Length: 136
Image 1 (cartoon, rainbow, N blue to C red):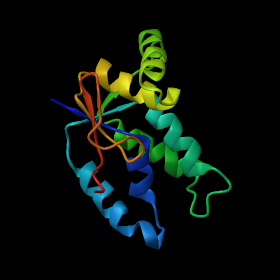
Image 2: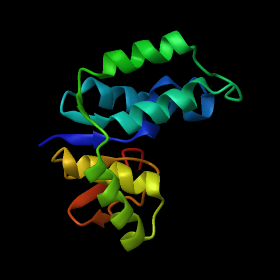
Image 3: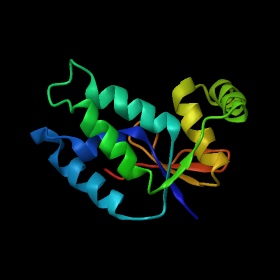
């Protein structure tokens, strides 16, 4: 069974902020494992956040592209109309953001039962997809 990584794990992996050092080490250790699934949405969010001009320790376009290419060694779930429709239902049913629902539904479509994320409630189960916060 593969597990799904949310965008925040990738962002912590590149963080140089002193107050995020422990999370960065944890994220890097997670990325050493091989049974991960990511999604096109995760890559899109990573690129936007990691390269945004207001980010004090932003990375260059070239660095972001190289990381995304390297992380394609993991299974990658495409964005699909089916995931969009399921995410709209999950958003409404569980009263969460569309973007969080889309992560959950991409994980489900890929056959993952766990999403590693800091952004959703740890331990919460979304109809068979459980949230794991690796930082607590």
